[in-house]
Length: 356
Image 1 (cartoon, rainbow, N blue to C red):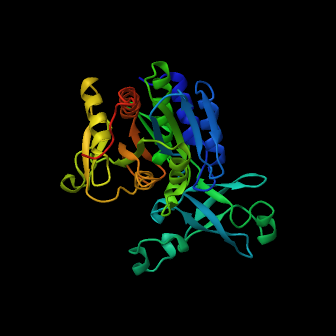
Image 2 (cartoon, helix red, strand yellow):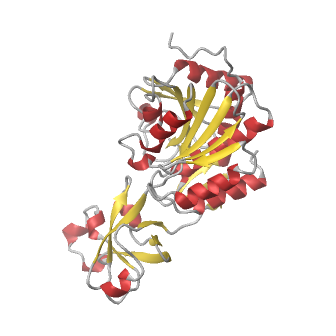
Image 3 (tube, helix red, strand yellow):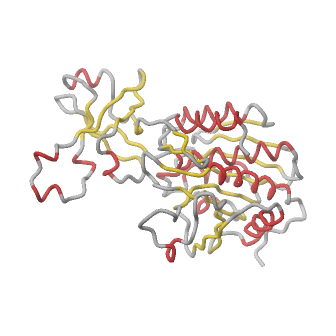
């Protein structure tokens, strides 16, 4: 089970704002925790953070979980002091209705509320339409543009102003589960590997800019920097145990059913089998998800780095993706960390990652 100190760190990490490109505060929290046990801790110009165990070992394994979250960015401030925003990453604008927003201003955080025309004043046809981000404004209480610009500037980032909440059945809710939970899981796996290290050098990376990473983001930089022979990416996937989802299309991945091992086109069969065999040997629950194309995760970039990296993807079932209230099972998180640590212990210089 996750220790109380690990849980306290997880909540600090979840509650620290860090949209893509603005991950510094969350990255500092991650590195501070890593410094309590890792042999080497560092960062780079892209905003990635690294923690390393057994630096003289071989081969090198990269564990990747991206630390950025979706967010908003100040696009325009009008004469009346209202703030208009654009998305950082993929948003469903409907989830912003009635929310409080926390802007990361240069002089400190600024709280705003999302404004929208009241339903009483809408025409009947407008009530049936889905809202667009351009239909909203954010009210920070400013009397005019000059006052607003004393507190905010174009390009300041923001997140929904919410905090993590414990739920029954060992679940947790947060706006930043995707993928702060992955950044946590790879560091927790590294911590457990440190307790009983194997032959491999293992580097955990809290990578930047995944939510906007059509170009490969921080993960591609991390893979080139760390120079791994094997990589395990940890991200979230859609939990399929709530109404309205089709298991025939998405598979069967319940909260509490364990990590999801992805199998498919760009996943290394060698690393998939390492993970599957480690799960079976240690009595750890898991499900399998088939992916016949790219995964829309950092695995897509990492497996193409250099001359190629044997890459696997481990996903944690997540309800209500890209909303202010994503939900995961802490039991799944614990099992994910345990599985990855065990898989890393099973790798040495004799491990052949060549496709066969």
